[in-house]
Amino acid sequence: MVGSGGAGYVRTGWDTMSDTTAGTEDQRRDGAEPESAPKTATFKESPSNTPVAATELRQTDAGNIEATTVTMDRSGAEQITAERVVMTQSGVMQMEARSAQLERSGVVNLKSEHVVLQGGTAFSVAADDARLVKSRAIAVVSGQTYLEGDARALLVVGPVSGEGKAIASGPGAAAFGAGLALGLLLFRRLLRRIFG
Image 1 (tube, rainbow, N blue to C red):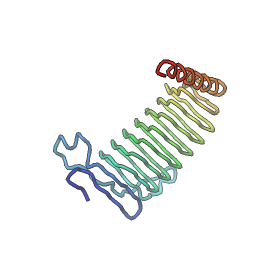
Image 2: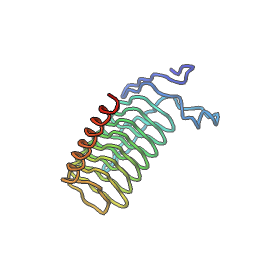
Image 3: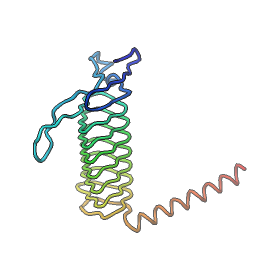
């Protein structure tokens, strides 16, 4: 159900999505009919190529999504909880998934067992296995991190391999964190003395 303000609440049999926005700004400007709800589509899961039901978002914005499989293309979401997420040119604030594949996409907070980030950006990634290809990340906590191509990560906790560049990893990451905490503590004390 889409209200006059452009927001609606949608619940389907397999998955739940709330607080959807009716289309993107470009769609409203162009006069195109925006998609107001995720659609159920068939997605072929690799490597078995077995078709599975998936929640699909195309050129739309969503609130919270809970599903088994989510595919996004030029879309955005506040929070996603799923077994598998595949994103292309999309963005999400918070994601928790067993497997996440992001192509030219961005995420603020990502928690997953397996992550592949290709040509995208992430603020924080927590994973058992993370592969960054030509991507950027601020913080990566992973059992194994692979940096390929021109991939760069500011802070990596865990083993790192590949030709990409980790600015701080292992003991350097711990020293960076301790130095940052000490600097913030001293700055706070200085502000208290100045402002009372």
